[in-house]
Image (cartoon, rainbow, N blue to C red):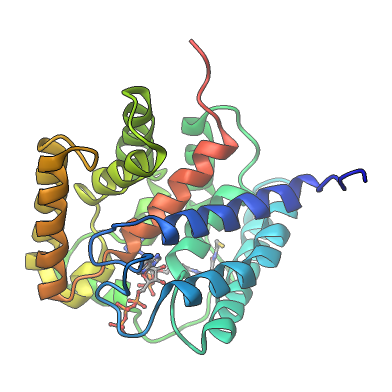
Length: 275
Ligand SMILES: CC(C)(COP(=O)(O)OP(=O)(O)OC[C@H]1O[C@@H](n2cnc3c(N)ncnc32)[C@H](O[C@H]2O[C@H](COP(=O)(O)OP(=O)(O)OP(=O)(O)O)[C@@H](O)[C@H]2O)[C@@H]1O)[C@@H](O)C(=O)NCCC(=O)NCCS
Ligand SMILES: Nc1ncnc2[nH]cnc12
């Protein structure tokens, strides 16, 4: 039987769902939901993450199908879809915030114009994030806004508006360098996550564990990479220590996990050029 071809937007949405699943299944991640455990979360597990990813795929398809100049009207349409996707996620998870940051990052990447090079795609997604969203509702301050006001650090919005520096400068280079030196795909993804953690102002960590938690995440992730990365014995030991430290602080790096999913999607949409 002949396989049915997917439309380009359905294909991109399937890649986005795949990226969410690849992130969630990646094991062992420090203090995050994975195949081993729920990490620092009493309210999430892998089955919930899978349900959330499935519920989001149709919304990713609608975001990828948006056309026209990337102007205020386009941004308004994307914002409406983003908020509907958040509602669909909450309906599928019984009100648990599994993927809010991922909807934001992946939505911007899917709605940006196609680009062969990752740097160009990330920059275009950043430009889209800089446009004002005219229908943005006035809501009580989110966890991210509370953390940003308290610690004067940028969160998910600033990350996107700057063209996703932690994907461009940490996540994607670490993924590709790790593969190039012969690491397994799982190790390359873990090293990518750790590289993101070394530099991210993750407002989930800040909200739950303050600057102490953020320092523990950044320095602990750097220690794993300095020990040789997740593929070495010394790196695995350091990763175990990072897991224990973050669990003791109740610090979950949900923002870093979202950016790993966004890194994996970027890697698929803009494969590395030969030579
Ligand atoms: C611009 C928005 C991202 C809103 O941003 P804001 O910072 O105001 O909102 P938050 O509610 O805090 O959500 C931001 C989520 O982004 C992730 N994140 C955190 N730091 C960063 C970072 N530096 N860079 C990138 N991403 C980051 C993070 O998501 C993950 O954590 C979630 C769990 O968090 P939380 O609810 O706080 O849960 P718990 O700690 O478990 O809570 P308790 O148990 O303690 O109660 C999880 O979902 C992960 O995904 C942050 O949560 C954007 O959302 C927006 O404006 N949207 C409007 C629609 C729109 O315009 N869309 C357009 C594109 S589709
Ligand atoms: N694997 C994960 N664990 C906890 N929070 C997350 N947010 C996105 N992915 C996550």
